[in-house]
Image 1: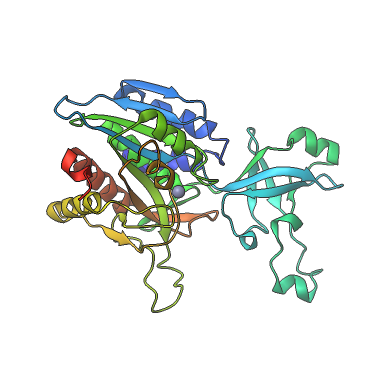
Image 2: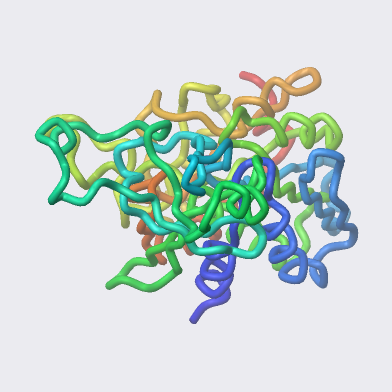
Length: 349
Ligand SMILES: [Zn+2]
């Protein structure tokens, strides 16, 4: 198994809803510490790694990937000792009933209960319950026991375990653990012409928060955001609507999403490198989604920023699929394109 896939399996299985990224940070640290000069955790919880350059360029480049995943949080209890939960980040309520989950630091197993079909009324079968009508059963005997085992604020993640599935990897949290493993690979390679700072950020899914702080403190000349993005090639939205991205067509380069627009020169640079090197790539359909680029490009006096992403099918659900070849091509594209960034590439036209 390649290091990329090996790392993806470890990080996919780690729990880390927004604001509780500790297990992910702990898993990443040993994967990079021998490859970087300095490593620290900032006040927000971002893991920041500095890798010295070979001294040929004075530019300072920031590369980010967010550690947090969408999930649930305990917000209360039923009288029978079940956990009331709220979503953290964007998860459709309709996919929650019947799922198994892991609760808190001890990874207590739980199930999101649903009325048995034998007792369900007609209305129950036609309409998905909202998250406020659902509860997580952890086998507690009483409300007091549930409170002791899972105090308010306890994070809850999907119980999905990483596996390979045909030509794909299947698991939870590829948004953005796929970006994290790509950043680990970049930091593990040969020095770049310039100092490169890798920021594994927190709280992207709840408002691009960690990246805002990281961009301010690092104060780079240019930033590259590595993401896992929506592949809606399946199920098809409508026959004539172009998918946002398609699994297997290579990394998706963002022209524009709802959070920012890539500066034209920086965009052209990445596209030209992909074409010159024969690296497959696709342009992400403009408009959909937002990334840490949304806060980074407006940090300080403005930072030219580009997002490159691994297509993830069934994103923001308990299980997504990524294609190994897309992940490998993303690392290759970003590695080569980053090495060739010059002051001209980031100067406005
Ligand atoms: Zn993401």
